[in-house]
Length: 250
Image (tube, rainbow, N blue to C red; front, side, top):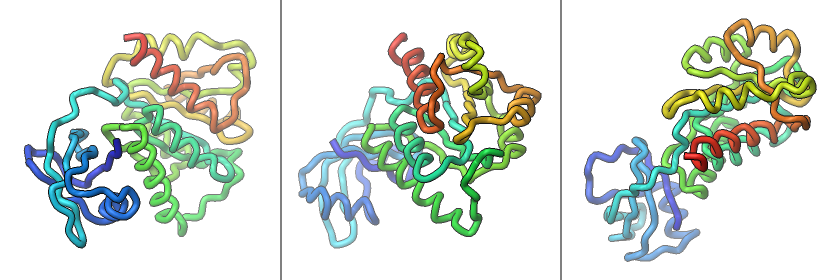
């Protein structure tokens, strides 16, 4: 069933008006009629099934039928920090990472990032990334939209990392050397509600200098198995492992 995220909080209201792009999608794309049902999600992560009561020229009025009781968010808060990759790879990471339950995406300007970030295009890029995340969250029936940050420098990322309980850097050389215990240990040690930040390099990976700076700042090095993963694949591997531990094993 279709799902839409609203820019308002749930505070016990019995009905809601939906306008803007979602109104257009409901009436022009989905061609819904009065009496049809779908889901809405409020900013405070409350989701509800609703029924269309009235369709006007500029908004749809819906009545709240029932609040969603099933928890669909990961029990832990996962932030994916990706060294800016080429092409549309970051869009892929945001889309699939949202489906897999990531709570936040933080692009960062890495030494080996081929892409040169243009600040004049920042607002447009962020708008597109947020739209991709919203559509993916609706499709996968999330109850919260992930946060999409502007690109950080490595220094800014390290400063921001103080907000997290666990800080991980996926390092290609560690995988080559057979390191395979740190990620398992961290996943098994983390508790529900913990915040986990995982850093992934761009094409070419994290440099030794970047790795050393991250480790000095409290990050733990993790290998992601014996195979070398692409920059757009590695975050999905980590999210899948976390989902298995916190959702399928409990």
